[in-house]
Length: 125
Image (cartoon, rainbow, N blue to C red; front, side, top):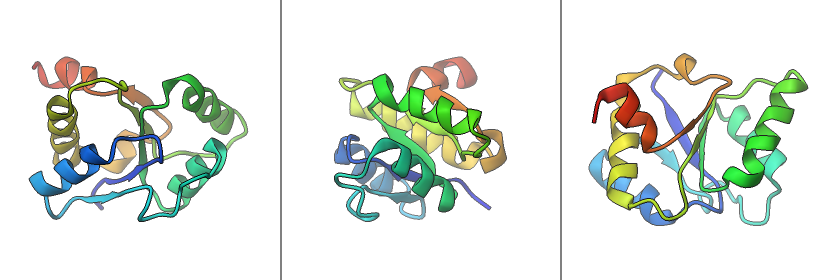
């Protein structure tokens, strides 16, 4: 099974669109695709988990706490990728495109990572 991504309503749609253009077979659902507009963070995490999708968000301030609370309550998560709000789109898309074929969903389970800095540490860029 390959990695599937879920953007929350906070994520810049250009990241989703550019990732899809780079890898048309990538399964990256936008917030609009999943009707996430106005949905509270804990529910977004739950929906992503139910769909077995790694959540991609700009919301490092509150999503990290909700993610921790989710794990502390015993609920598993496919993982979360935090993207800085003003990160250049190119390196973020490159990171997502590198992550997608280079790993398995289990490697991200119950983990939160910051992109694109993760790629520099893992892939030496």
